Length: 240
Figure 1: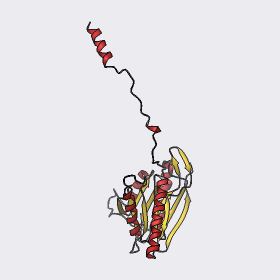
Figure 2: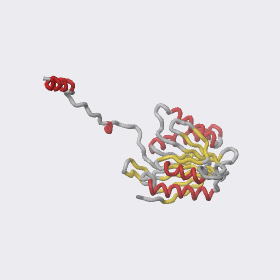
Figure 3: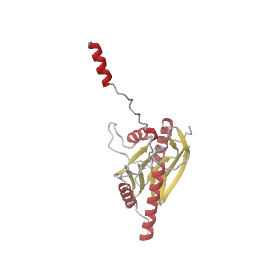
Figure 4: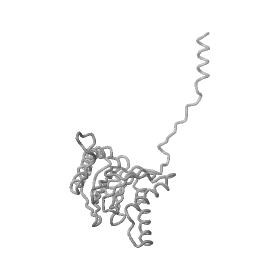
């Protein structure tokens, strides 16, 4: 008798219909992660900005040359990572505002002013952010290299070096060791690199990252900004 009553209670507790499964993979998402990596290194009288050119989604490579670094003026370069479409739109907005500044004041916008403009632009979109993590490099009013890093809603920090993107977990510790001198006995803080050292370090960083990160590779765009202007070179990375 007890067994029959226990069985009836179980039947009453069991659901009569299986729960409906939710398939979130069919939902539309306005953002996409296109991978890629960017870094910036500030020197005494120069800034180096570098980024790879691979654009991918998942395990598919959309194109092997989609630049992530853009020359905004003759002394400022913007590098981005993550969403390619948002990066291009952000670059267009900044270029337009730099041109408006030039036509209004009859001079190029300064690096500091453009850095603040970028922060304001990102913050103005905080309710529907640009899915990018920018790095801005240029020459400041004193002729020194200026490097700025941002989050997606405009928080800004002036840095000596920084890496963002899919391989940042590989590149940032390397920069911490070689420039920040972190976890090294007898080190006296960050060291200031020469132009040749910064170039060699950037190439080594991306060469190593391309070996381990499938979203980084193909081509490497390197911008060096100094008092004479912006100098660009492109080098080859792994294509697999």
